[in-house]
Length: 451
Image 1 (tube, rainbow, N blue to C red):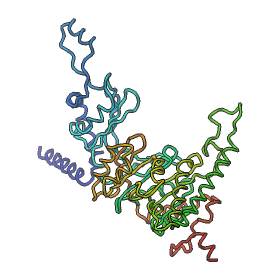
Image 2 (cartoon, helix red, strand yellow):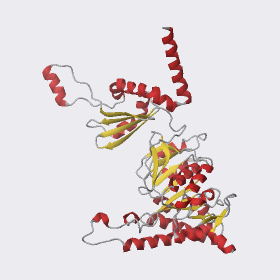
Image 3 (cartoon, helix red, strand yellow):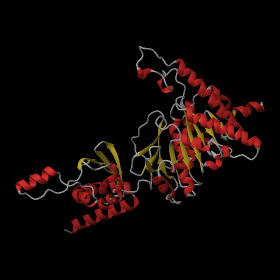
Image 4 (cartoon, rainbow, N blue to C red):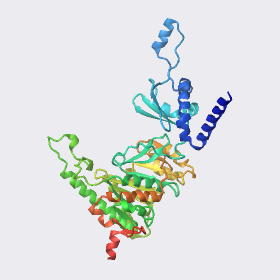
């Protein structure tokens, strides 16, 4: 008996220590079993208490009166599947007539408390089927990306969502994105994860970093073009516009419009072209967009208008030509001048890290989701990297990118430097590493001028 008590004490102590120091290990060893038992035992009563049941149908009531049996109880949604994951539980429910996914979304806080979980989110899988994703611990406190990640072209895993799933930056589905965040909010780490994920793919990376290149130039070995000032940025954007027009001419030559060609084989963008003719896609990363929009003289204002016009043209027309924009900044509002709101309207992917005021959050989500604005302004200052990601459909979620040091990102870019595509129109802006030991670099254009 004493030996059994010691063993039980050891198990309880181990569970408490794991829950405190290693919540992921605790969940996989003890938490998942307890959670499955809680959900299985409490399910019917919790659904009734949360108002997620429906009254019995008329024919069941009539049958009960005819047979003299007790009145049937209200019915809870049926559990189609309960699947444990490394971060929580996934329940697929068959909703009853009259229920809607918004009923479950409104009850997520009550479900979280009743089932003893850390978080609960609800989403509709298809008509009549709702998925509840429950997390057993704070997955954003210490981000650990899963081992199995979907690696497809132009789809990059950049962060972990609060429900334990992977957040992807899918350029073919959401071609252009806007990332906002105050200083030390984790915006640079998010950008490093993005570049690191794209480095292994066949894609041309173009960077515009008007902070003298301190953010993007360390990663220059994997970039096809870089600009560190407004003048070079204007020339680079104009070159991209010319490249876009040339790609459209190629698509028109290869459209293959004839009676014998199936509709699905008609070329409308670069992904419909044969692989041997397809130009490499281009991702344009702008580190601080405000530096491109500010001006102090008439000459600078003219340059600024040309830059914004080129960005708007790329945002409106670049998707089919395989040109995707990733715009970053601390603020992105109408105070930056004309054309800014037109540009923002084209950036359907929105990500906001910690911001300094509510106005900045409204710049990201005010036109798509008021709830996302509230979530963005509640990000604590002591949690760098946490962000709110949304899109034009109004959906949003809290995410956090795994910490990637600048050295790790530099190593990844150096590893895949040989995969940098050769785009002729971008050749004058290709960064050249002068010395591997010192890591100094310059632009081809500047080097040529010096020669």
